[in-house]
Amino acid sequence: MVVYAFILVPPWEQAHRADSGESVYLFYARAAIACGRLSSQGCEGRRPTNRWTGAAVAYFSTRLVRRKLNEIAPPGQLNRWASNLSVMKFEILAGLPTSGDWPEQFSATGMGAHREGLVVKFYPDNQSTWVGNFQRGMTNVSDATEHPNGTNAIVVASGQGYVVDIDTRQLIECFGGIIDSMFRVPNQNVIIFGDCTTFLAYGPNGILWRSRRVSWDGVRSVTIKGDELVGEAWTPMGEAWKPFAVELTSGVVRGGSYDLPE
View 1 (cartoon, one colour):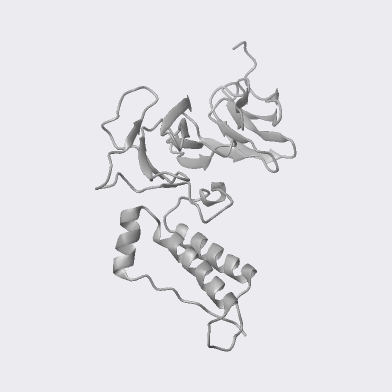
View 2: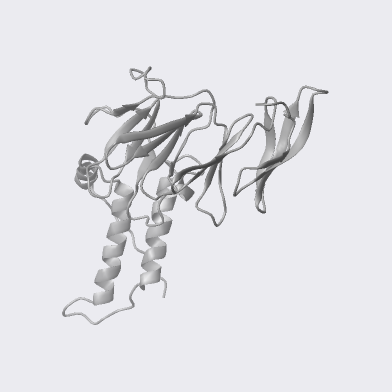
């Protein structure tokens, strides 16, 4: 027998969840899990019926959360959240909130704090939620991802990178400014950030390596292939593209178009 469950959240409950900072969609998942627990325990005075299994409850809640979050999260962000979907660590908002506490301001230069930047809402494990306003860099790449250390967050606001302690709301460090690509290394706890000339890798303990300059001005077709990051680098000599490869573990570059001393 196939069992379908529909969970309706009344307006007053939605308002309560909004005031408390909890996502209504996470409430859906919690309610689904609660239904599963009730059905597995049976009801006093009633004959036990077909029950949801733990796997079915997990599948339902996971699909529900992901489907709803697809409406509010940018492409690629969902795969960078913590594996435990019942605790959301951050989400990118459409703009500054119109109520609540004043957002924490983050700027790589100390300027522009009066402007709206990339707005991110954080959900610490044992503290109240808070909002950060991150001043933008010089590209169109923006995202928020969990730091490889599993504690901090990395926010990229139009190419400007920030490492933030979610619990203390403190800025750990800034990097980049013209970041235009991000890659998670499969089966490794490493994130690689690239711009038009170089690459930088972050691991659990911070920066793993910085590559030498691979291009005069621009790279294309960049992807991870085996144990290397490969692509093409532009050169003004003949306006051509030359192949390059960066070792994922060391950042050592082979090929590329730039061969002058740095």
